[in-house]
Length: 46
Image (tube, rainbow, N blue to C red; front, side, top):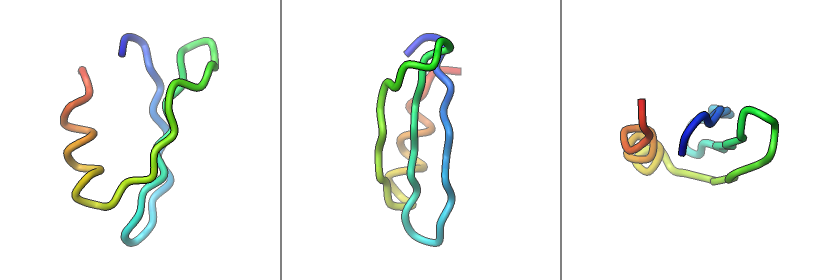
């Protein structure tokens, strides 16, 4: 995903992750557990 903004809403066990293009178009919305969040973020390009 090139040029993607990622927003994260933190909670104790579940994270809401939203990705948008630089123009504001929604690319994804995910609900992830702590373990899934760590794996998801490490898979994202720098």
